[in-house]
Image 1 (cartoon, rainbow, N blue to C red):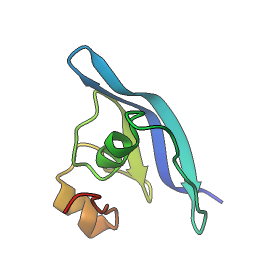
Image 2 (cartoon, rainbow, N blue to C red; image 1 turned 120 degrees about the vertical axis):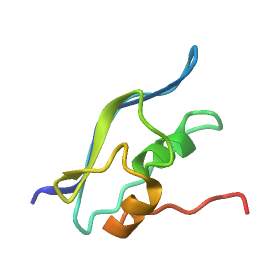
Image 3 (cartoon, helix red, strand yellow; image 1 turned 120 degrees about the horizontal axis):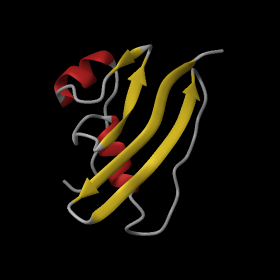
Length: 88
């Protein structure tokens, strides 16, 4: 079964700080995965990159065979990739 979501080499740098460093994984349809780590590990930044709220410094996100990194967040949402926020 092919991946519905593919994250390849995703990296995000904020000046001298690397928040997400070369993260890669695939999610198959109907599969459930978890991202865990301590505060400041880059979890929220990773999800912002996947949903296109941030532009990656390197790497790409593909959803249903289409690259979605660097698209506007509302376009990603129309394609089916959305996120929720902890803060209201």
